[in-house]
Image (cartoon, rainbow, N blue to C red; front, side, top):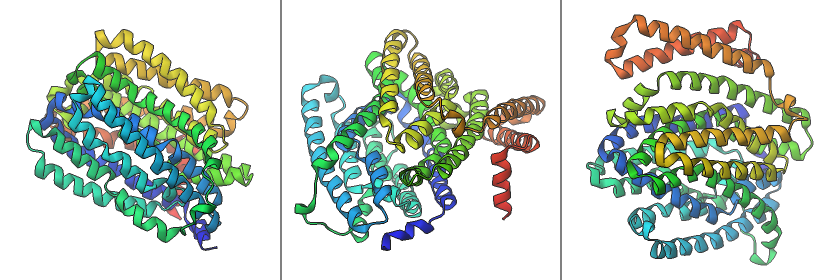
Length: 486
């Protein structure tokens, strides 16, 4: 079987490539976000954030749960090219139909909803993401673990996006141009997938396709994706309706930083889903739980480091990335950084455990319950506290999701975590924070340069944090160092 070549793909290589891609999602915004924030200001960014949150709902409708279902299903049959080819074509046909319906509904909504008419241009530009995601079929490449191709292709278009941004986004009124640039930089690379896909899989006669076979499981994943999308975008959408563009811009700045950092925490779990689905389907329980323990240890180590560092350094981070006009976003950022570890754990339990085991219904229920709680909290807090109120609601909602998932998995939860790693990471984060703050107070020169201060603080924190974990003999860190030496 020519598809068997994926067996030789190293999980470590996939992680490194996905980590590179994830890092680019952090580094490129470090380059672009300070510039865009100062050009578009909070209200301009608020318009972009609001329109994006609306488009994400139509993107959800068009995808219909296929991305998650596609990764899991293709990972199971990827050794059989004939089965894989038929599966890919069936899912693509379904996706085209749902995309056409989604775009039609978007156009009708723009005509009928007065609020959408104010953002008509932005919505139409950002709607390109919908059909680009469809023809891109990214789920196939993730299932085949082709992260080298995904990473290189994405990095090239990110660079193109940066060049276009600096060339054409020059004044406050250029927010629509910036929206187009984000489409090119973020989704433009998916055009390359369409031509490449049919060199990987064969074309199958339509008469051999069975579309109805996928409807029930796809709808299950759609409910999960809908719950996730509502959960991820409702805070920004409600803030846009109940407050103003400026508050939405403040919250958007804080959320963008959180999303970049959360992507780093979730980098390992992202590449594990195809492998975990394959292990679970073949009843390789020991390998399944061993991978999950590595992922949870990584989440704890990276999560506690990010939480401690970002809460303490929230103001200089916001000022560096967005400018002094975004200082009101600092409290919102500190609040949503508190549950960032829980966000990582929720992603692991939902994506890597429950979805891999075919129990996505649990995550759907947990997310919907959290969604309702967030709406109630936001309606009370947003009118009075704006972005801060939204951050509080999101933090509480994250806790609810994790609590429900942990309760459901209580019989196997100890198989998923290295409990000692949690306490070692927490203690190391506290020690590193104390040392970092103490040194910063004794070296006032660092305060003269925001970038220099953050850089030195970061170096100090990471060194002390790493030394502490090594002294405490954290298993994940020692295994990683051993692997690097080899």
